[in-house]
Amino acid sequence: MASRDGASCALVAMCLLMQLALPQAATTEPLVPAMFVFGDSTVDVGNNNYLKNCSIDCKADHPRYGVDYLDQAPTGRFSNGHNLADQLAQLLGFAESPPPFLSLREESRIPQMMSTGINFASGGSGILDGTGQHCGVVLRMSEQVGNFSSLVKSANQTAADLVSKSLFFTSVGSNDFFEYLGAKDPRNATEFLQHLVSSYSSNLKGLYAAGARKFSVVSPSLVGCVLSQRLIANQTNDLDRFNCLAPANNLSYLLYPKIVSMLDDLSTQLPGMNYSLGDSIRMAELVFNNTHTPDSFTVLDSACCGEGDFGASACNVSVPLCKNRSSYLFFDRFHPTENASRFTATELFSDPGRFVHPINVQQLAASHP
Image (cartoon, rainbow, N blue to C red; front, top):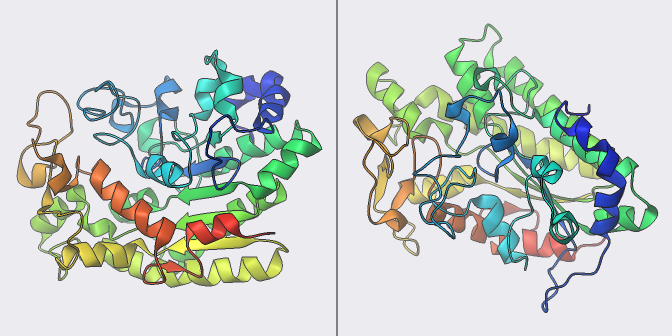
């Protein structure tokens, strides 16, 4: 399905994809020729900035976002600095994360920027098309996939060959949980999760049909420990062992094995498909059990940018900002700090098998279809 915002890019699609086939200018060649990113606010690098009818709550285009970025200015990343997509891109050898898809209409440096890939992610989106309506307008997951597919259809065989060697990174699913729980969806959890997995599978098949072969997927983490959900848990006393919202975390635990099975089935059905699945639940458990020391997270239940219980207010210039941001797990009421994203990206890239299966991203990059 083509995006209504992406449709206006159709006239430049062929030029953009041809540029993807240009040689890398960097002195050190990245491990893959390009990186394509799909998902929600954990990996959005500014697409929502270009959606005029997207609500302020679903944009990170204002201070204090970006306080630790290059010029201390907000970029659309829901972080104090780099997010998960940025961190993983850098580990793959790129100088920076690929640019937001919707910026292409206004970017004069398209040929230079497009040589490393595109970020299609949109804050507030989910696996399901109905997720994100509270934002007004977001790029739904099916739209993200449709936008990419439209570009590929306009490209030549050289670009198609590049796509087959590139990394496709997806981080999505948390917003589906938030909305399911908040709306008291009449479907039972089993039916809801089956619907999620079916939709996720369809989107990945869509990317495969467009030429994708290397998939890096991150499961939703312990979403009940997100500070907005901790606040609800504190009010309802529906707590789990981490003092997080139990129903939300239960969904995470139930979904993960279904994603495992779905990816295993797809890799059997789709010739040449390789994948790496990151278990962000176990990563979170490591942190909440205080057994993770390298990144020295000392504040696990309060936002760096926020006020009130758990710092779970909106993040803006009117609320306090912590000084030692590297010690905080959460930057705002929903999103991790740059340091937390760095921890996750490092595990995704080089984990020997504790959290990432069946191979890590570094091994995925070296795989052959």
